[in-house]
Length: 463
Image (cartoon, rainbow, N blue to C red; front, side, top):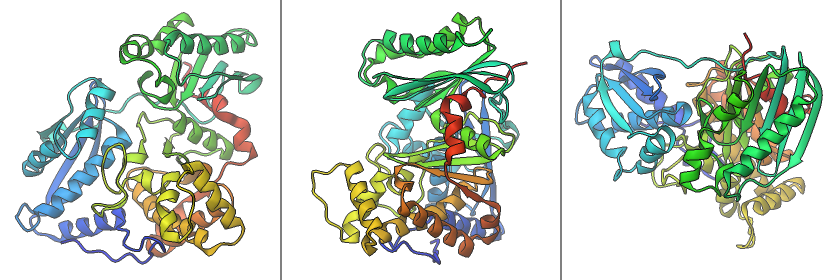
């Protein structure tokens, strides 16, 4: 049995079992074993994209079986929700593949992941297969976006739930910017969405001599410019979504003379805005709001094509705690880094609130008590900060970043400062070399001035 002893414990959740420490302990034991197994995990998409993760397992034996399955299942889960794919291939571990097939099945413990990563996102049955090392090779999608890529006449747009923003730029200079209210959530006619987006593009184009490229930002999962899941379309039937929303942005591209047209998740575009503000790359953006949202700009300054749905990645390896309401899984990010985390910790803090209060109102109570100097509120933020320090180190195992952009409603006020202080304390104590390599960033006025729409305009590449 893998045992760990964290040096830092969340005040309100001292039994927290950080994924990063457990993974490190398992790998240390595996690498020390004379018959350890080198394996390769590939995450594939139907269009031919493949990402590869190499690791090491303990020897196959009855004594190691449970720890090895736990390690592999949690790593696969992380990779699926960070990268996104409908097929998993694993080399040199047929025993693990057989077990994972049962877990990731329509009747298995990960039925939600099985369905979401299969039919919902990629229109095919999800599968876990054996593979050979020689066949499991990385095939990356074309890079999109680039910090500072603003030459030409560009339009950038951002689609929110209450407004849509659009900007027109000439060689990086903003010549037009506009915000228009709309209400897409419960509109059942896809024509509403199309007309709204086209209207914004047309209004921006009127301020340019010509349009060389268009980039867009919206909440949800977008694969190769195709909406797969998005709250903006919640009022649209499944049939209309597949027939009218899936091809929407390709149709718009054709209507705009097939100029470069790229769409990205709003988390990635937020990270791009942060990268533009600090004039650097390698940015991981984490937003703690209603849920946990994330975005990533790699060291080359580009969007990766990963889905970055870190709300669903496992960060706590305890079983039977902090269950995610969507997937039914334990210990996933949303329950540790969002308004849901605050609500989960409230009873442990001793602060009582009315059962009628929603999550935003519960957060407001905690924020007010924090300003008043209430030690119980302080303990909530300290606990989230301790979670965060260990999880930043976990993210660094999969993401190469120098800057961590921290935002969202949970980050506002003095409580956000406590979260950052505690996260830094964990990094300094447990991961000192990593701590020295990461800078924390919070949105300032410069970042806000860039805006989502302007950052989205960097996505298309102009030859």
